[in-house]
Image (cartoon, rainbow over all chains, first blue to last red; front, side, top):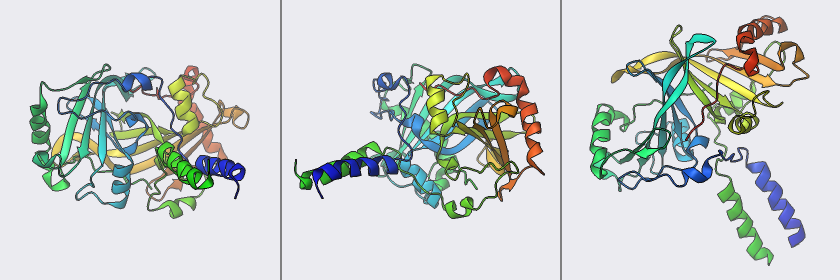
Length: 176
Length: 176
């Protein structure tokens, strides 16, 4: 096969296979500049493009939430391979204050952005915290949470009640 | 450049650019057999892979919800191009009964699946209902809602309060 044939062939395969083309948010450049958490964990630049693990609501805090997963996490969730979650899984919890819809007040929308939190699975690197590395970025300016790397003790402590679920509260939805 | 160089080069470009590879749910084959709504609208087979438009909560029904969008809808939402939404936009609203987490009872998870609803934008085809075609599939067996095609009058009626927002209740989240 000649080069002149191969180039459009690969280009076509490329377009056909990329079912979900990346769609850059307007602020992609800014996000690359987000400061890492005090333990060195970076906010994945493409987290807004990740697929749904589950929605949630906190009745005590009036928070509406969405938990997304990267490809490794979505693959594991759909295969039921979460005891434990495989290395490379990343879960992102996106949290907003509820805001009643102005035309339908019992519908609580995502209002003020509260924070984004991630859990990164690396059984060796994060062995001291159940195999998960934790990080949180607060508010619209994504300020890293925690004074120093010791902040993860707080995260891990809160996740201890779900030790039997590999420290993950969220049960991935199974869509019909 | 020789063919022997081009092939791995294109393969690498291909893998690098396909940030989100399609991950088939276990029931992809079954879903293709989902009956269409009485107005002929089909449930898009890949809706579980769509990206997040917004989470939501209904305080009257105790529903946790996630609204996803296909590529056209996500592109429009991120560009602020939703007055009106462009033809080809599809929004999917996924609805579950809330279920208190057994280890954290103020955290409401996605419990029993209630239904999936979609809105399909086609200004000409659906001119009588504001340019949107509506459909709903109820329960885990995705039973099409409505006796006949007239069911859309009910959908459109409920969406009339948000006529000024091109009949869409949900305001897409802008992730930082």
